[in-house]
Image 1 (spheres, rainbow, N blue to C red):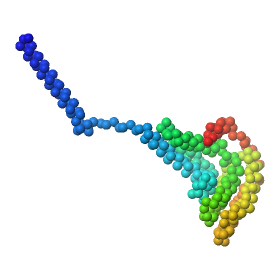
Image 2: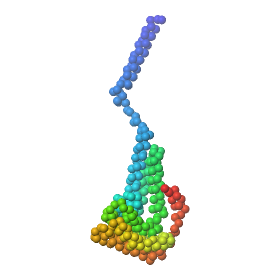
Image 3: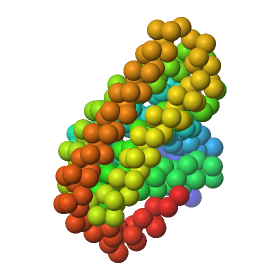
Image 4: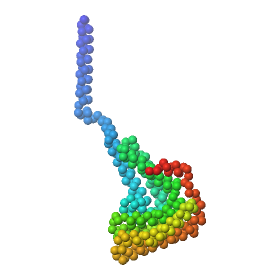
Length: 290
């Protein structure tokens, strides 16, 4: 080996050694704590369990809000279900109230559609599917079938049930239940006025049935309701409270008589609607059965 080649080899070895030392230094720097703090961290992926908990909580939140809205629109059903914070209210079926309820139902369907169904627990998935079915069924009823515009007996049923569910269940002292009854009684003329505005061309058989049911409702309020009140302890209340109840019942009976007269003298003659809801509505009704 010549002197030149020895010199070249020595220089190459030193270059290689310098490069190796530089690489080691870089590796040590990269692994130092200070450098690790500056390195961007990837966000940790949510675990399946936490994703399920979050989506289940969202379904529970939507469900609670949905049921509050449902019972606000159907306070008589709330009383029947044992939810007595709605006892003083009576249904409204004005066109504006129905439109607001339909908007609420569409909003609920949209909120449920944004839930990640695949992340839900089996129980919450069932709740989700039930809520979707119920909301779509109620929309079908309000917007397409329209019983509130087709069935005059709907309104007498609501009036009778609103009293019956309060009187026949001893969930509270009669003096407290009396306050709810008085409040509902005051709203009966308003509800029956909404009925007269809503009912335009119902099926004749519906109006004929409603005439008979109105007569039954008048009898119910004239005889059965005072008896139920006495049986629940109303006779032991102060005379002024008993007089309030009697006046309220008389007001309900008067409103029902006016409604019955209107059914026979006005609505019956123009009740030419079709009782059939149509194949498509029937198909949708089957799909939303709960």
